[in-house]
Image 1 (cartoon, rainbow over the protein chains, first blue to last red):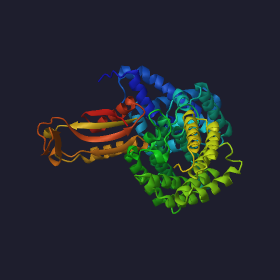
Image 2 (image 1 turned 60 degrees about the horizontal axis):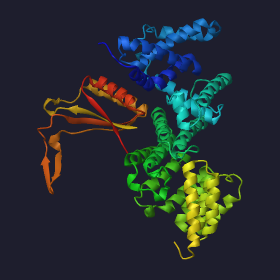
Image 3 (image 1 turned 180 degrees about the vertical axis):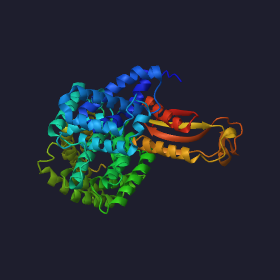
Image 4 (image 1 turned 60 degrees about the vertical axis):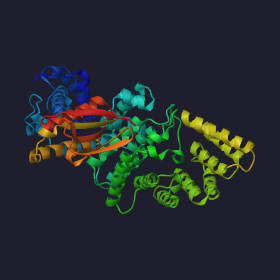
Length: 432
Length: 113
């Protein structure tokens, strides 16, 4: 039956298949840069042939088969790569079906093998030899299947920057001779940490954009969530993968509530909880339970998920179980000691035991250099001072926080709080 | 973006026997693939109208009608909530779903909020 699929339809099929195709081709050639080029060459063929011959029943198999044929052609041209050629020759004999790129070709490759290739690709894209922003760009491109313009738009950086990062990443991987494999043993755990870090970094950039005028960029959140779900499906036995998915699901449930009508940020305790997405919360609870099933001790992502879940369980802010939150933050501070965790613990303490006790904790942090330029430190301190009736000092802290904030919406919110504290003070004592 | 995809079924012509083990297996593989792609958020089926009820309010009067609703020609049979980047992607996944089903119709609609 003739197919009249348009370019847009073919491109959609290509996008859906891209991560798998690249993973299989990268495994086949051992060369990520080449794999991406081959996948794109295969798309060019598809755009010519599919409108004429119809979209194949299994577009992924078709694209992969064409990509493999092109790889072989490329290796034939580069005789210096004789070893790879010999290796491919052997594989060719194993899969003698490499004919016209029909559907049968890749059915020879089981879905388990494709899954393995995808996991390997994720680990290579998140290799510590790469700088973090480079890992992020490469993961979004190769594992998420985002285009360079899409990544550039999401991060509000020029396309050339993203393109450069990806080129640099591929070169660095080739130079370092990073093997196309999933690490084993102890190495596996630390490398998995690097993978989770990249995914959470993408999520966080969407959840509280560090630059630009938008406070949230939901498309980055859903991309990260999708990457997390992919990883959880591919590596189902790692508790922290489920912990991270749980954390992202529950935080996603608040996306709608996090911005007001003008796009200004709405803080957790001021959010309209009726708009929290119950589907995300439910999925998050399921993932959290899965993480708990798999491990005796909660890792940092699972602990953060438990914190998010604790908030999600109370319909009113005043019903929040702050004692539970203090306990969870204390556990988190033990698992990953960090001044930011301490700051969050102080916020929980302020609710459980009052602002004075929390202020003492925050003052310790003010003395350390690590958070010196972290706007939320001053925002939290301002909030505590406000609650203690020290409005002038509070206003000064909010102003300091506003000056340090890099996000436009956040800066506006903090300036407003500074003004509010000043006017509360002007109204005299006895307020609030 | 979230999309609700749903199949339509005519109860009068609905097959009475359970799906074949082969279709069951194929559908399982499809759901697995879509899950591994991270796009399925929720799925479900909808039971025949004979097991449901219809509730309406008009001029202050509630009317509750137990199923089946004989006059309805097109009924939702099953549904899936998908998280895709855009409509063409949701369409692509729906095509694959239909490919597994053999034939039928899927409607996809963006879900707001």
